[in-house]
Image 1 (tube, one colour):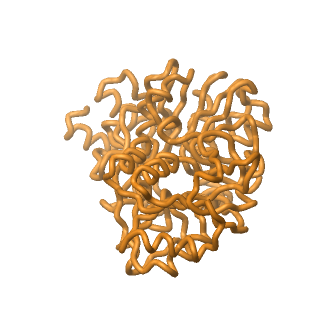
Image 2 (cartoon, rainbow, N blue to C red):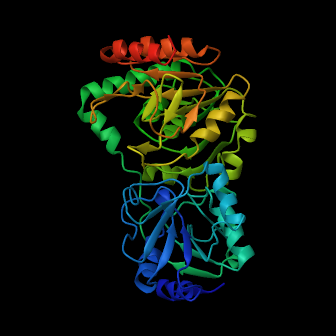
Image 3 (cartoon, one colour):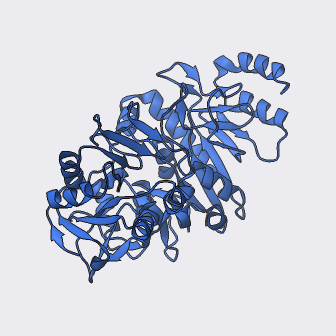
Amino acid sequence: MSTITADQAAALIAAKAAEPRIVVSGNGAVPWTMLRSVDAHVPRYRLFVLNSPVGVPDRDGVTLESAFVGPGMRRSPRLAYYPSRLSHVPHLFRSGKLAVDAVVVHTSVPYNGKVSLGCEINILCGVIEAAQASGGLVIAQTNPTMPYTFGDGEYDLDMFDAVVEADEPVRPLGHGAVSASAADPERAESAAIIGALVSDRVGDGATLQLGIGEIPDATLGGLSRKKDLGIWTEMLSDGVLSLAEAGALDPDRVITASFVYGSLDLYRWIDRNERVRVLRTETVNSPARICQNYGMTSINTALQVDLLDQANASRIKARIHSGFGGQTDFTVGAMHAPHGQAIMALRSWHPKAQVSTIVPLLDEPVTSFQHTCVITEHGVAEMMGCSEKEQAANLIDRAAHPGVRAHLWDQARQLGLA
């Protein structure tokens, strides 16, 4: 291990292959200093990032790769999307299907002789192992603003082929949806109603997983009156801070996540916090591990749900918008947990597109299916233990927007669901 400049590290990567595949930390942990040098010194390369924010290089010569597409890659003509449940993504690298020439991770500064991958562990442990097995480079960009988290992302410094020192702010998650809700009373009211309906179904002692978005955030706020809650989640966000401050979390249970994406206050809170463990995605997203949590409650959202209880959370007009992520992993795991439930929560109406989110039959690929219930601002549609005709009736009468219920009943009859 040696400490070198970002330009020197980029030169090492350029020497690996004519078009190296480079995997970097994603979400809020992109190593921007290294990425700028890579883009300046490597003419052609493949860049793999999970949920990339705006600002990643997108030019001729760069092939953007991801299994979960973020705003920095969405709609790019240079995107290569790899459909995969998140728990399976590390296997794509270990199997050699996606050969890794270099991994660039964004880490904390050393603490007790080690650095931590901080707020982004996710698939990176598996990718590092794949790179080491195939002779790829493993480069750390250390940063004093990156929190040190305990768990699978702790590494000795001598594990890295090179270390680049940088001092750049760790980017917080933008709260555009929350701001939009605050500026729109009707939107805020519907989010609050959905959040209340979801939280009413969560009992004391349950274990929570929440996806990304306004609805899960609104739900977390309504859980502050619960007791002894546990957290086993792919993404840890600011709502957990509210639950901790309200005393709703079980103090004897470790808060488990695969990555952390939120405010600077959240990043400061997780720094060397013994209550928090950030583990590799193969552990956190394994349905076999998820189902071991008592009262495991998976709370996710979607773009559409059809009358067969199939959800699309990935594509718009056949083009990839995000990806499977962990929704499939957690839906399956929660449904098999003792007293577990997989909740699908969404608004009944999409205001921008002016369309119903409850549709007769999806014309997009399915992200998840077989949920416990579907919740909108109009009510709760029970799914588990219902026949397909009962499911359709519940969705139409209890979850769909009143203005489209007659149409949905007509379609249900044509589909043999009424």
